[in-house]
Structure formats: structure tokens, C-alpha cells
Image (cartoon, rainbow, N blue to C red; front, side, top):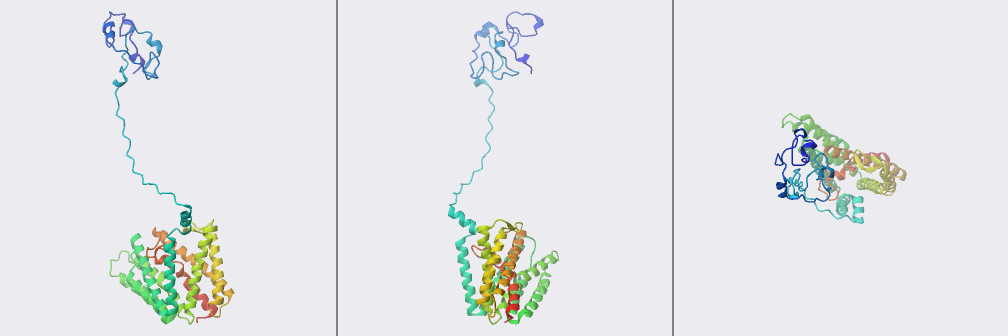
Length: 386
């Protein structure tokens, strides 16, 4: 609509094309004569609108010069006379606001430091660690067979955690029953019959997995039996080397050295990495591990190895302990990264929740399992089979 359709009528109240001349005063369209103008209410003054104009002084409004062309007392029908007569469009209702959870209070500096240091329940982790250590030491030096039972229980629980996570996160269903029974047999055979007995038990366990899986449909057979054989090798077969160390005359001392070196390596990596860690060791596998932490693991483990070989292992030398500590730091780190790789593939943080502050049994065995054959082999080389 152009400006001419909204303009004021010429003098005399005439509305029409200019070439038709002036007509007698009277209503001719929407204009009004003088008598009608007397009954017309005056236009109220709206703040912010210039005198003689109206709101929206663009295409639909006029300046004060247009107001002078109208006769006194006449009103212009260019819109409602009062603001309350203007059509009111419904105001859009505001979008619903989702309730916000209450903000948690900012942690104190001591809590922040504890979270940075531990990342878990530190008190629970220490308590569980002390309890496990007491059970291990008591069974190790009081009755060797009791320690073999501790290893068997740890192996069976670890297998249950591993196979359960595989079934939950993927479609892999590794046969737990033959793997658990075969794993327990491996540990006992290794303690009673040595390395030969452990290998025979491993072979029979793999055969049992193949046969056990035949009772189910063939879909996924190769996938499931492969996972079962892997689980049998990863957990019980590697744990068998602890039983081999225990079978020696100074078996408790060898197992204690193995446990101490692994724990010291992990502790050194954690302490140095937390305090000085800057450069990531394997960010795609375990973002929390740093190269500085690896240096700490090597340093602490080598120092502990020298002390263990000098004072704990009969016939050992301090320099052998340095090599043993270096090998333990490497194997423990690789074992930790290996299980981190498995957990990342499964999309989980821990293998279980059995141990408060630690996770599951497998989360404690990750560095011990690959370290056991390394320590067993080096002790055999340095001081003999015992």
C-alpha cells in the first residue's frame, strides 16, 4: 500500500482524484464534514511521536507539513485513535525452562588436591590394600598351599569379571566354566608339576573350550572360542608363574620380591607422574600416564630391586637387582597399558567394583600378570630354579 492511500483528505472534506474538482461538503468516503468532526475525539498525544504525525513515520506516516493541510478540528483516519484501541497481538509465551539442578558447592582446596592425587576413594583404597597385603603375607609365610588357594580365587574372580564385561559390552560369550576350571587346574599343576604341568593344563583348557562351545548354535563359534582361549592365557596361565616361583625352596621370598617390585614400580610411576608429569606417555591408551611417571617407575623399581636381591634373595647381587627392577618397570607398564587398551575397547573404566577404591580384581592384576613370567625367568637365570 503506497503513501497516497493513507494521506489526509484535501480541504473541504473531499476524497477523490484531484481532477474531479471540488464537491459539496459532505461525506464522500471515509472523510467527515465539520459537524462530524465536532463529534470526533481528539487525537491523544503519544510520547515520542512528533506533533502532526503518528507512529511509524515511514511509508504510513507524515511529517508536520501534512498536518497543516487539514482543516481545523478534522481528524485523520490513519489508524486507531487511542493506544488501547490498537489490535493487541498475543505475546508469545516464553519457552519452558528445564529445572536446573542445584549447584554443588565448590570443593575446598584440600578436597581438590585429594581428587587430583587419588581420583578414587583414597581411604577405601588404602584400607583394601592393607587388608589384601595382610592376607597375602599371612598365607605366603604360614602355609604355601593357602597362598596357592588365594591365587586360584583371584584367577577365577578375574576370569568372571573379564568374561562378564565381554558379554555386557559386546556380543562375545567366552565359555566361563571350562576357562575357570582349567585356570584353577593350571595354577595347581604349576605348583605341583612345574612348568610342564602348567603347559599341559593350558592345552587341555583350550580343548575344553572348543568342545564346550559346540553345545550352542554355530553362529559366533570362532569368536567365542578365541575369546575363551585368550582369557585362559591372559589370566590363569600368566598367574601360573607365581606358583612356579612359590615352588622353589625360597619361594615365599621370591614371590614377596615379585610383589614388592611391582607395587613399588606402580607407586613410583604414580608419585612422580602426579608431581612432575607433563608429557603424555600414551595419550590414546591411558591419558593419565606420563613419561616422567615412567622414569619414576624405573628409578623406584631399580632401587627396590637392588635391595631385594641383596637382602631378600639368597645368592643374589645388587647389580642383578638393578636389571630386575628395570625389567619389572617395563613389564608392569606394558601390562597396565594392555588392560587399559582392553577397557577402552569395551568402553569401561574398571573391570569390576569388588574392591572399593580399586575397581575389580582384574584392575589389580593388570601389572602383576605380565610381570610374573619376567621375574620368574630372571630369578632362574640369576640364582637358579631353587
